[in-house]
Amino acid sequence: MKTHELFIDGAYAPAASGKTFAKISPVDGRQISVVHEALAEDVDRAVRAARAALEGPWGRMPLRQRTNLLLDLARAIERRAPEFVEAEIQDTGHTRHFSETIEIPRGAANFEIFANLLKNLGGEFFSMDTPDGKGAVNMELHRPKGVIAVISPWNAPFLLMTWKVGPALACGNAVIVKPSEESPATAALLGEVMNEVGIPKGVYNVIHGFGPGSAGELLTQHPGVDGITFTGETRTGEAIMKQAAVGLRDVSFELGGKNPGLIFADCDMDKAIEVTMRSAFANCGQVCLGTERLYVERPIFAEFVARLKAGAEALKPGGPDDPGTTLGPLISAEHRRKVLSYYDKARELGAQVVTGGGVPHFGDSRDQGFFIQPTIWTGLEEDSAVIREEIFGPCCHIRPFDTEEEAIRLANDTRYGLAATVLTENLSRAHRVGRRLEAGLIWVNSWFLRDLRTSFGGSKSSGIGREGGAHSLEFYTERSNLCVKL
Ligand code: NAD
Ligand code: 6OD
Image (cartoon, rainbow, N blue to C red; front, side, top):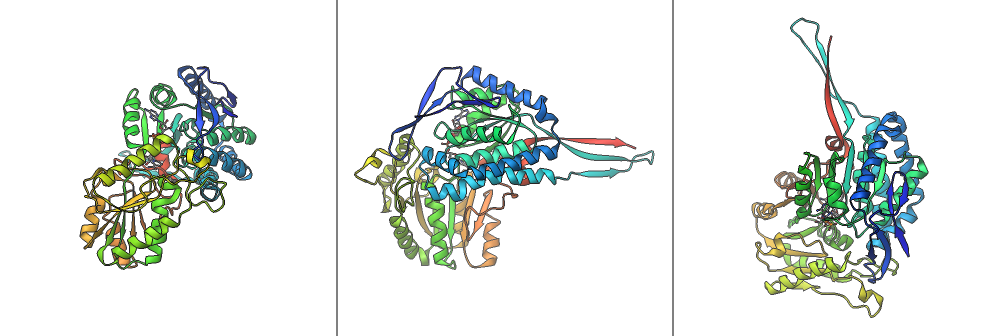
């Protein structure tokens, strides 16, 4: 059975804690690996290694050499993509297609785009007048922030982890990654590739473990950490913010969502169904940007519901190696219990279950996995928990609306503000509605489409700060103004 040790100071090493935990396959409930759990001594060692890297060759490395190493890293990930895909799908049960076409290539791209960005980075420059007439010049300097703690989730492990490690390293920081306890494999494998391309030791460290009372909490409380970038649940973000308060460490948070989709009667129906099938069911609904609340203009409500139902029922649940699989499992037994509790709640609240609402049966080992039926409801009140809380499963509620104003009000009536989609062929409506939606990412006639140079993040309870392109410099660098009197 595979064992994932920690990766500290350029080498794999057992946890000093002597503790390990089991990683369970979401496809059939079998244990697939043993994972070492980092506790205080291990976290301390990782922080010391990262600090030493900043004071050593990494900290002194010219920008061109540093960014070239990251470009080499991107190529090496591409070369070893089949290994990354295998590691990711074993841990998560994701469809092979999703891992091969999105997760792993995006991981490589995350190093490439930030390396290129830093290579070509300019900065503010102001020439100013002074009373003696000689003047002064002001210029903006960027310095690495220092040791960055990267706390990442399990729903797109490699993509979301590298989305943070890429800019952190391009800006010259050293990182300590704490991947989710549910998805340790790709973060572990990346250590090997870091060594292969010659990234100096201590620049990239991985500690495994849980959140509270374990590696996550210990890392975010460590005084040697200068900044914490976190992707995960809003409630976890609140806990980490308290932990980060000691020493006033900076945070960057990408949190939960309860994203609306607005489908207007003037949409292209085929496009609306294609977009919604992805936004509601891709990755078995385990996407922070996914759509769990749909509002459909009344004249096309019945047709939309019927066509989405047909689409959901055509999805083929199965493991990554089952031919034709289009819907993988949920990540864990615990997560499935949570999603099923909303399925029960919806029924208790009198929802009409258009399709799904339970667990599929295979008659083989997959019955020990964590599969669940894609589910669509109608008829719930907007103040019900099913509509207000993030479920993070393959499910959505659909409600009719009558006016554009009503659709906007319903969409914005949430504590979250991560993403929204609008389906319309009316260009004026697209702009008019789009600019009134309270979300960090707004799509018209598409979903998940994004130039990586744009900002990414959520408002309200969906996050703090923005990452992506030059926006990442806000968090991953410290800025100074150098004012030179002439
Ligand atoms: P989670 O919050 O349970 O865990 C995320 C990470 O935080 C894990 O590594 C976990 O071990 C760690 N952690 C938990 N408690 C901690 C603590 N007290 N201190 C330090 N670390 C701690 O999230 P999850 O279940 O892994 O992921 C699903 C959630 O992530 C969903 O809410 C989803 O919306 C959100 N998410 C958001 C985005 C985004 O970009 N906004 C992207 C992906 C996922
Ligand atoms: O594409 C990205 O960079 C990104 N952060 C996607 C988030 C997906 C959430 O599940």
